[in-house]
Length: 331
Image (cartoon, rainbow, N blue to C red; front, side, top):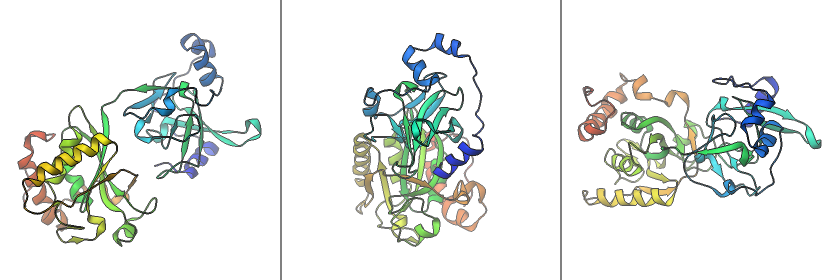
């Protein structure tokens, strides 16, 4: 996750290397773009505030550069800044945006441009919401909406080493990251979370393709691969950081989570205590926690705790695995 100090470093010492570079003359751009898009993106113009419906558009998808179609932002990072321009907390990836010092109009600002074609997008400020604290203030005409089936789910069910290992094996899951959510502060450390005082839960953030796997399916798998009936406890792990929790990003996800809980509850004698709460931010855990099972498969915790869970999961959800023919790990 980018921080303000990273942006200042890029602006002063050079920007991340783009995946590719598109270079055209102003005349070529002018022949391809609408007049107002050309003025904004190639002549470093600014559109009138509240002149676009994009400010109030909050639906899943991605936003690409209006000039070269490079994807720059995910709708997941869009928020209502009440400034009159579309605002985002983070770009899709570090090298999607380039940064330049802008001392025009008697101000010192950081200009943002598409790192692929150098189109002027807007500016970035350090008055955004957590977890990044950044506000990418963009001209709507510099962006175009791109529909996408990519979604995110944030779930907690005890130690994130176990949870991550399970969801990584599902077909339709693109990436899984271990981290923290639901606490009192931004960017907590593992030590702070482990104390139980920060209020965070150990969670995984799952990037998935909704055309292959639904949020409802993810929740059903989540509820049936850990014990959702024990309060702040999973096996030998005790504390609020190990609570069972589902974070929803919209009303549809909330309803799907409640439906899944109702269905699983009918199969259990004990009452499900899983929390269903609004998503408020995800903080990626330290690197040594990422993909822990794959990197430390011979560790005692992996053999004693994770292997049995994985075996039961693979047996129950065989048809949903990325590789149905994979061999089960011995206990």
